[in-house]
Length: 295
Length: 196
Image (cartoon, rainbow over all chains, first blue to last red; front, side, top):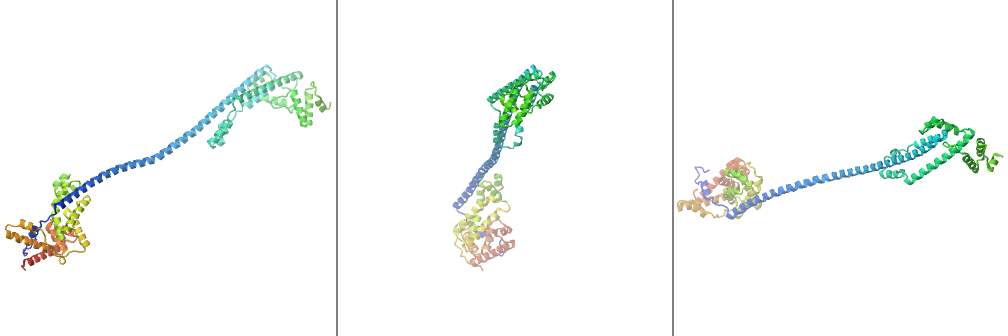
């Protein structure tokens, strides 16, 4: 860099005097610093990887924490679903019980009907009993509505209320069934007796009891014979107090007349008594009834 | 790869190798640049202790910045830029931006070694050492910016363009500063020798 005019070679002079260098202590210190820096960087790298791993683990936990409530909700929903199904199962059980009871009732009815039919077959002229059976069978053939139909408008009812309703509608216990059976039997017996007594009167007087042919009786065996019903209605119209299903015996007619007297309805009682006297002239009236009649 | 970088032997390759974990690459780089860098601080700052502190601080910064080092410029430009900034901070902090007129040069302890190395004959060696000492004195009396440019020009292999990057000046400015610095040194030496 020295120019020709220069007296001094600056470059050479400088380089000859540029011999200074840092001490060995400084050199060692700087090298140590460099090593330390490398080590710390390596540690940071390891920590970074560890932190990365821990972060990955944290991410996994976070994803698990997200999944767990969803799974819990699903389990809860499934539990509710099965609970509802349980209720539905109870309903089914209840329906089965109802149907079983219905079957039992049917059997009882069938048994009673067969008994009546056996007796009626013995007397071909027993039109009223046929009518009675027909009407009774019609009444009994009205099957109770299924539980589902009964509760149809209450489908939105809570399950507890449904259960209570089921309890209320549940069939009677076996004891009740037995009582019903005996009551039916008694009824039938009374009916038979009445029929027998009335038959006696009708035979002697050739009176108002309608007479069915054999064919009609066999038709009535099925339980529903409209013709027979019509005839029985015509027959029963003669007496205003005769019931729909039974033709009362003279005793029962007299009993009903007495009841009317006791109740104070003497005019009605007198009317009925006149009809009775016409109907049963051979029967002697008691004193009180004779007084009412003006004898 | 690190071995290849060390074999490549450039400052940049060595720095990259150190960045990748090779301490030997750093040792090689340090050995190559420790003396010029040390002299740079020593000639700029008259206090030897402050110069040593700044020198260590400069290497500490180089080490810390190694992670962010990218081969966008020559390593020497990057490293001396750090050194230049440290000097400026030092002058600002001390509020003693030493100039050619204000500071008195200190006596340097290195003349003996210069004598030992220099000459063929004892007379010539003595004269050479005396001239070197006079030059050192004259350098210390230069303005700071001219001194810096002269020292960088002498101690490093950087061209004027690179010098301009280090000192943060234009190429022409650096060229002028260098020319003035040399002229002043010649004048100073002539005065010292009693030639003029």
